[in-house]
Image (cartoon, rainbow, N blue to C red; front, side, top):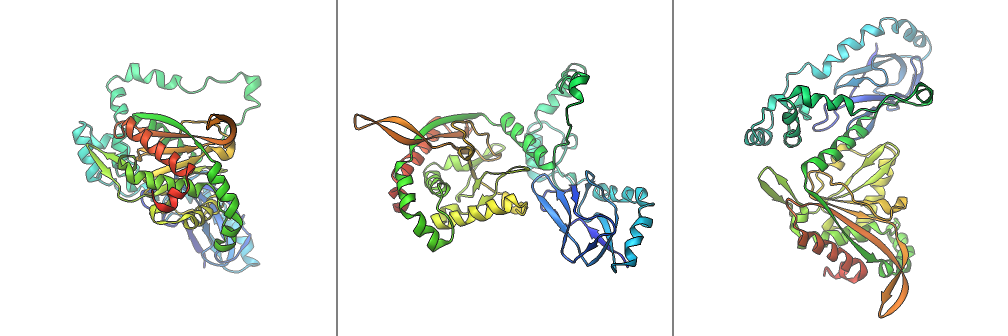
Length: 410
């Protein structure tokens, strides 16, 4: 009897996934819990393991197809020898099999808009039925409504507004160049990154303020204790833990930097869930260090090391990348000297770290070489005033230049 391979529950607000690649071919022997196929969602990439041992039969969902939770991806036949011949016979009717798999994700009726989305839509004079929902079963969420104002503006005038849209895509390359190009469809994760970054620019009054920090004392402290720290805690002492600690202390003093806008309300977060941007070969992911204000340097470093390893292996869970209140992005590891990071909506601020570079500085009337780093704080000017943003960045600078403040909570 064949065992079906099903799409697992994908997580809250994730309604579909794209088949990435199959690790086995029909007829290959498989072991129980062995990874069979890779699924890409708009948040993470996950692997579906074999529900039983046997032989991979027919594959019902090919690479590139979109499937919903519970959809059948393929089958596993019992046995190892004679069953290997069955996939060849089973592949004949395969074209008809994907047909029922596709409606599986869309057969359920669309869910009504969330209460918050309905309220904001009413305030803005929008019809939720005309807004594409990103929630489960197409439910319209608050973020969908906040991202919608630009769409109604274009709808009343289809002729003038629609004309520029087709013109926006790239102009076709000359045949001689087109033959040397390669077109690859964006992954779900990359599509989501592109959409969210554009939404952040469109929906927030984003501004960036800069400062620079002398890393001399942090580097000296790290060099003095890094071996003892690693021996005791089993993890290397990096710079990120100092920045997380400095930011959580500054967030307590400047609560607006740790808040978000919801319609006409401001929600102040009395906790610090700090997102740490991690680059992977499939795109940028931002796992969240929860209650970071309660952790010491060792606890932060252990959490970051675990996130980094699992992010590169594609093993992060969706819930580990949700609920952040503030984000830190370290472009310095790639050599960036200065940048203006984009907000991670609905958060109101993001700190950008950059490359440590020795520069001539005037200290006590003398020109000396100091390891300096530029810091950039991008923030939503609708909720954070310039004074608050600058003060926040100065507090971070003060804590890093005098690391004793991090220990004494000053």
